[in-house]
Amino acid sequence: MKIIVLVKQVPDSTEIRVDKVTGTLIRAGVPSIINPDDLAGVEEALRLKEEKGATVTVVSMGPLQATGMLKELYARGVDECILITDRAFAGADTCATSYTLAAALKKVGYDLIIAGRQAIDGDTAQVGPQTAERLNIPQVTYVDKIMDVDEEKIIVRKSLEDTEEVIEAKLPCLLTTLSGMNEPRYMNCNDIVDSFGKEVKIMTFKDLEIAAEKVGLAGSPTKVHRTFTKDVTADTQTYNLSAEETVSMIVKSLQEKQLITK
Image (cartoon, rainbow, N blue to C red; front, side, top):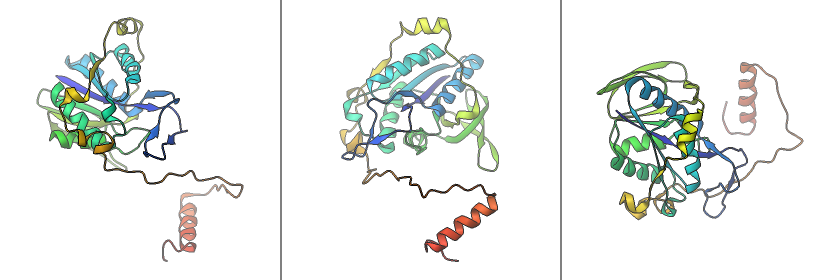
């Protein structure tokens, strides 16, 4: 079984700035980490590798600096790391990103694709589902447990707000995982040493043979027209209320501002 895990390098900071001209995030000078939901997906893939003899390939889309993150994943035990990188992909929204990822995955091949539920820098939760749609394969989102898998199907538990569902899906399929579903393993000394001798495979725009107008900013219909930071003033008040009292206060405030009617 060939498992692909989609991973994103994200800023390890809440001090995110936005380019006012392009509407894209400014990442320069901000330390980066592996997106938590994605890291949970990597751990699940490694457990399946140990249990089922699967191979684990990590695929990431981003700048060349993401090779350091991918080397870390070699040290955790993955078999192959692929970085999709090219200036043509810069400024991609979820639509352009999923188009690019799907093109790469068609070339790489897969039996099971695992992606984090969402990235902490965007919180859209769209890339995984959009990629599955472009590949025309089944998808299960918000997975908090992989219960069983064989060559033809997978059984998972999906976490909803007030309940859980057990779902069976045919392979190949795509799952999106939650960060709380497991405790990712640490790197071990032997794999750290071995990681220095392993190469991250690079895939560029030319390698994917895709349309230029569908990637990067050109292929991104999402546009940020304006951003602003809400100032916190001395007039800010803090309340310690019950759930019922909180609801009543919010409703009263909205009614006073004529945002809702009685």
